[in-house]
Length: 369
Image (cartoon, rainbow, N blue to C red; front, side, top):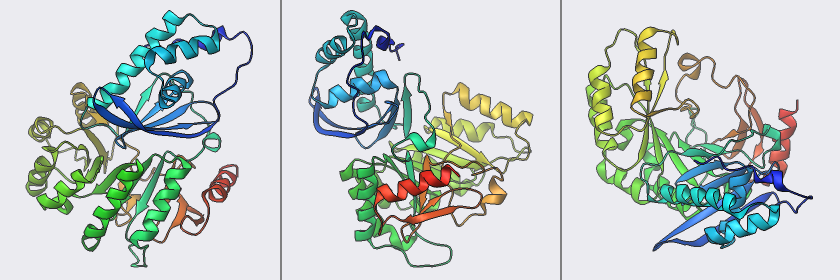
């Protein structure tokens, strides 16, 4: 990405800021390809851009303004002129950044296996209480205690509330075998709304090729697979899944006594997109550092912020998980209860029965102590 010139230095006097809020366009065209943009403008004027319900791009103020005027229907030349007039800045300097921004954005449209999130420009991180909404909602479909869950109609209600609040990313967890049919219907609804969707599961949940194909057809954007690649049956399933155009992260246990060389080469060959690790006794162990270095050299990501199944004993997997009070990722239980994940999770209300603004106000109050 280019430097994204700090053209705000040219401002001779205060200008009218773009209002914080949620902006959408479903009728943009790149060549002959239609595409959708959803832009969330934060109070500090950073942006959260959702492209084609397939990736979320965090934008600094400069990139946010470019995205805003693109949503307003302006082409790159018009955007450069608009920004130049707003800031009394040299149009040639601004046009260079606008062209790079547009080229980068259109590159996402042409790409496959997109990562769930990306960043354009230097982002000045806002405090959790200063963002409009969380960046992700982790939705659990079944309960270890076998308590009742929401109907599909009710899930659609909470997904629509999430969309209207500007939450761009939905992670789906603990989908049972019995829920597969209704789950496909909900995936279609998420795609129609334009929300980025991810599924946390195990490879054997996807062993039916027709079900996996339906996930792809209905717009699933990425997978987090909890599995030990040392198990031959899991690795066979993994390879089959990886051969599809779907961003896939393998979250695996690490054993210091295991030689992962052949296993990793096989996974790289099949196009693994990301890794995460658990059951690590020593984060400074030489073998683990060497493995992480190999992954980095292959330009494969290491993710450590994805949610865990409630059917697993998280304390044994990662004792440090959720030891900071954060509002960027919230949890939704099968009955609609909205949770702030923490060592002792805080229930703030029920998203099915309450409006989003009141729930988010409660979240900020919790965060403020």
